[in-house]
Length: 436
Image (cartoon, rainbow, N blue to C red; front, side, top):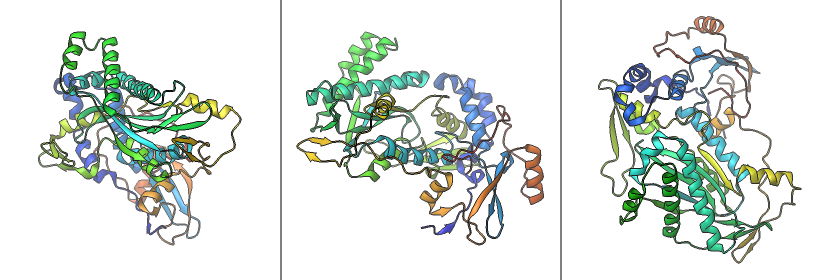
C-alpha cells in the first residue's frame, strides 16, 4: 500500500557525487602517471559513464513533464543516465528488473544453490588487464559444474541450469574477480525429468575448477608450467568454492532475492563517507573472520581509481546463461510445441518439470520499481493524490533553460564539461524509462 508521496532524489547531495564532481578532471590529468601501471590505460568507457552519471537526475540535461489529471498540478522529472555498475539509482533499477525477470522467465520452480568460485590473489591481476578472461573464467566454472554433476549422477546427458554473475569487487571495493552462480541443485534430462543432486564433495569440484583455470591461463600464455607446478605444491592453492546457500523449490521469493544479490552494485553509498575538508573517502564493511579491519580510507583520487576499475566495457556481459538456462536451450524450447504445464511431483530424487510461468502483462515501469522499494508512487499527485500522466519530454537545451529559468530552477553547473556529450534521440521505453 502506498503510504507517502514520492519525493525525487537529489543526486548532487550524495557522497558519491560530491566525491567525483570536483575531482574527476584532476583524476584524468594524473591518471597516466599515478594509476596506469596498476589499472591499465584509462578506458574511454570510464569517462563516458562518469560524465553521464554527473548529469543523472539533473533537470538541465532534460526532463519529462508530468501533469495531474484532476487538479492539473505539473511537476518535472529529470532523465537518468542508465549507467550500470556505477550509478546507484540506475543500477538498482536493473537489479530489481533482473530479479523479477529471471524469476518469471528463466528459473524453474526447483531447488537451487548459490556457488561462489574464487581464484588465488596471484592470478587476479591477469583478469584486471584483460577483461575478456572474465568470460572465459565463467566458462571454466560452468564446464566444471556440468562435468562434476554428470559424473555424480552417472549420466552424460544430464544438463544443469546455470546463471553466472561475474563480479570484480570485494567487500572493500578491492579488485577481486570471482563468480556468483545460481545453479539448479540437480540436472535436467532429455525426457523432461529433473534429477536432484545428492550432497557432493565440494573439494573435488574445486580441484576440477582449478585444473580448468590453470589450463586456460597456460593456453593464454599468462603463466608458465613451472609456476603451475609451484602452485600445485602449496598446501592451500587459493582456489575456493562455497555452496552453502540453498533455495527450496517453492521459495520464489528466495530465488528473486538471490538473483538480485548476484547483480548487486560494486559499492553502497550507505557505507561511504566523503570528507571534503581532507578530500578523503571512508568506506566501511562488515568485519569478517580473518580480516584485520572493516574499513578503508581512500584519498579521493585513489577512491575514483578504485571505483571506476569495476565499470564494464561496452557490450561486456557480466551475466552469463549456461546449460538448460542458456539462450540456445531456451530458444529451442520455445520453437517446440509447448508441453502442458504440469504440477511438480516429487519422487525419490526425481522431479517432473513443467515450464516456468509466463509473465503477466508488462508492468516493469520506473514507477512500479520505485513503488516496490520505497512504498511511494511517483505518479500520485503530491497536491490532491490524484493520478498523474506524462505529457511531454523536453530535451532541447534552449527550451530546457527557458523553462528552468522561468521556474527559478536554473543553476550554473559546477560539474566538469562532458567531453563525450552528443545530442542523441530521446526515446521512452515503458520497460525501463529514462526517468528517475
